[in-house]
Image 1 (cartoon, one colour):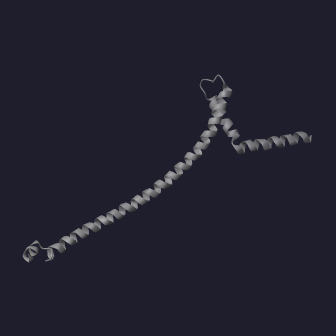
Image 2: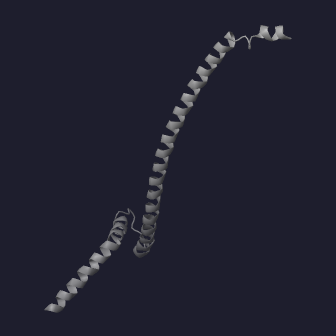
Image 3: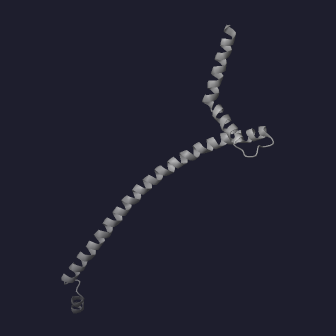
Length: 123
């Protein structure tokens, strides 16, 4: 009586192992894809082999791409913030230059040193 019990326990451990490793999900996905084929492939085993290998590769590629998307989104957010800061600086510098230009012109008009008439009279 205890012998089948041990066998059931081992089977349950093996099933959990396959679930944790993602084997059950991969097999299920491939079998669902085979089931959903409108025209059944002539070689079902070859279909499973091709899609099972591709499923593992897609998963690894998918994780790498997801990480890349996350990194690019973070970089985009940093660059957007930097762009906003630089635009604010350019705006401030532009306003300062405009103000400086106005002040310089006002001083130029009032100063005898910059007057075109004073330069001619000293020669």
